[in-house]
Structures are given as structure tokens and as C-alpha cells.
Amino acid sequence: MDLPAFKKHQYEFTAHIRDPDKNAKPNDIEDRRMAIYRDLFYNNIEGFIASGFPVIREIYSDENWHKMVRDFFANHQSKSPYFLEISQEFIEYLTNERQVQDEDPAGLIELAHYEWVELALHVSDETIDMNNIDANGDLLSQHPVFSPVAWPLVYQFPVHTMGPDNLPDIAPEQLTYLVVYRNRSDQVRFLEINPVTARLISLLQENESYTGNDAIKHIIEEMKHPNPEVVQRGGLAALEELQQHGIILGTKIS
Image (cartoon, rainbow, N blue to C red; front, side, top):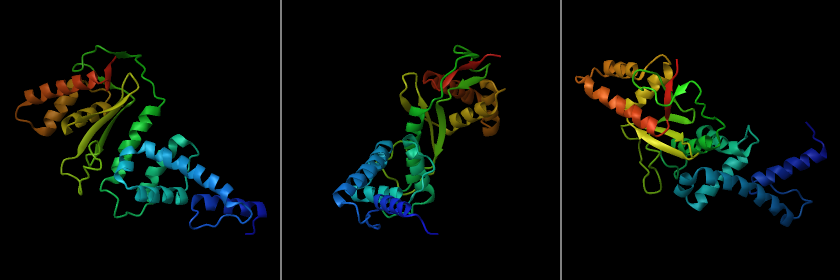
């Protein structure tokens, strides 16, 4: 299909900005002027990704980092025009489009997701509504209510400890269970939990009729634990710790 001259010009202009090594600049634009747009667009995107994924940025050399970001900038078709959603677009690129490179660490996609969660919680417009919640309610005899800005997460890799000096080649046998949450001071924090606490959270979030005791008894039956009192005490301690961090807000008022 033939395109109007101005549209051809626009395509040449944007193609060169995206990938100047593969696409020549329009003939009628001085390179000095074109460089302003090349640098402005790329540096904005690169800076936002670097600030959103600081651990990943630190893992890569300058050369490999800019090679990856340039590939994203040149080839990924973003579905959102919003800067705050560039991080999601970058994860989409890593997950579905990027060809694995020798310099990519194992667990890259999980690490990217973990870093994205911090930004997502920080900018989330979810608010804590204490209506119908008893902040001093009994966690065992009533239903514990979780904060909408507390996200239980499970990863194969220990993403919360990964960095340039800690990059496991393979995933450990033990999964990593975390709750990433935004506290009352609007700070994003994480709490590492064990599999039993993760199961406790899952049961309470899936069953609104469950009391804390119901969920703990469910776990005791699943584990067939020879000493139920140990699980009972551990379950209560876990609920109390979650409440101390603001992950549990209180209990549901009937």
C-alpha cells in the first residue's frame, strides 16, 4: 500500500529513533538535530527502566544493559502509553520476546517481577478502609482481614537476596515465600515467610468464612502433624506477626 509522503517521513523518523544502527535517518534532517531526538527518547526510557529495576541494572555491564534496553526500545510494541506502565511492558518483553543471552542470570524474569512489585505497590491507588474491621479483634475466633496493599508471592529463586554477588545458577529446592506490602508510612517492605504461613494466608484469603482457628486446623489436618499444639502456637504467632507488620488489618466485623 502506498503511503502519503508525510507518513513515510514519520515512519523513517521513528524507525531511526528506535534503532539508529539499522535505520538511516531521513535525508532532509541534520544529524545534529536528529541526535537530540535519539538521545531524548532513548535516555528517558532507559532511565525509567534503570530506576524501576535497580538490581537488574547492577547485574549487567553497561554494554549488555544498553544492548538489552535498546532491543526493548526498538522491537517491543508497547500497549500502554503511560510511563508508569513501562515496567510492565519491560516484563512482557523479558517474558515473551527476549531471546535468552549468555549474560542473562537465571531467575531474571522472577527478579524483574519482584522489582516491579515494589513500584506497583508504591503507586497503587488502593486505600485501606477500616470500615467493618475490628483492629483489636481476636485473630483465632474471627476472620482476619488482609491489607489490599499486601501481596503474598511465591518464587523459585530467592529474588529478595539476588544481586551481582549472589546469582544462583539453578533454583534452590526450597521455594521462596514473601509478602510484599506497603505500610502506613507508604513505604514498601517485604517479609519472608515459611510455607506453612503462606498456606495459612492462602486459606484465609480463599475462605472468608474461616476464622484463624479454622485455617490452622485445616493445616493440621493437611500436615497430619503428630503434635497439633505446635502448629496451633505457630499459627497464632504467624497471625500476630502479620498483624504487627500491617499485613493483617484486624478481623471482620460480622
